[in-house]
Image (tube, rainbow, N blue to C red):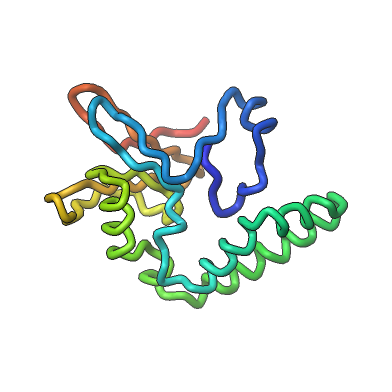
Length: 167
């Protein structure tokens, strides 16, 4: 489980109850010999400066401690207000601002020393070829989970972006 833009307060207790563990953003995993960077993806959307300011604020331990010290009712009201602000703000933003910044994708992949990146956040499932310092790489984008779920299926022979129906 990796934190995203709405579930950043979930902790180890939640992950354990789901039979999982929290992994850090920016983790590099070995997919059958291919080092692959895992990101939620919101950090790649650097064109959306207001969101990046929000992201920096809510990931601060002091902000999180303050929020968690409030009653459940207060936290729900704050979350509802933040969600409403987000929806209103996003309605007026151009798609390219809410999408990843290509130069940031290249930067993080080069810094991590990988040719493959898997992320979500933008909810625009696709496979993109990326020109890197050391040749070409691949950016795998997972889709949103509504009636359909998205995953990467990897084997020794292949890696594919695939969807499945959610019952």
